[in-house]
Image 1: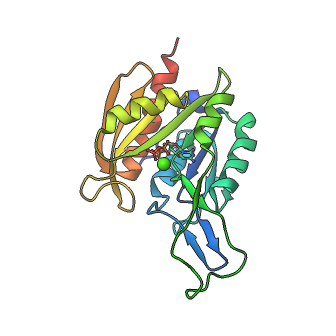
Image 2: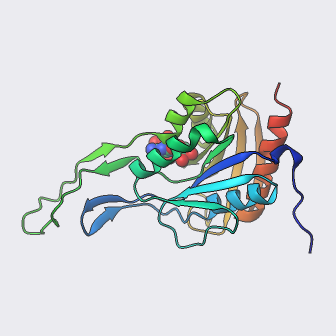
Length: 225
Ligand code: CTP
Ligand code: CA
């Protein structure tokens, strides 16, 4: 077997990756979550590690182990993830938001909801957009990478997110495509830069896609003027 090649560009670079779902409490026994397994984010973390970077992962509740030699920072809710990621921003060079952060959260009840008393209506509030906040605070020497989980006009929506959130790159992911995306082992990613240039990373297993993602980001950063 061969060792994955180190990339000189990533030597001494600090990379933060977010991964997995979040859990938003409804009451002490219930929560809202999503289908994210965390596999794509962990694969990205391992690929950056293999390429020579120093890597940390801020992850929601997942059932897959965090790769060796990657610093794990477990969180639960979108609010927890926001506070950890935003507090780490000043110390890192590259941030990849692969987490499926909840867009809405209930106002949690301290008491378990009893079925006889509950009217069936859950009021949900918007959560903070972590990536957009990172984009507002981004240093010129920092690289910000997002994912776009889409159905429908995948590239159009991804192009809007890259502008709205002040990202360097976005990886669009058609979550409606059969057998691809959230819970599975394979995925299809299309990279997009700020100039609207697309690059199809193909349909592969998440580890291979993660290596392609790292190669793409390094290549783009090295040729950035
Ligand atoms: N994201 C985030 N904080 C949130 C929601 C999303 O940081 N509260 C990040 C995700 O990690 C991802 C990117 O924003 O990198 C895009 O997430 P996505 O769900 O595709 O887009 P949204 O901006 O949430 O819009 P919508 O869900 O309505 O498409
Ligand atoms: Ca969302």
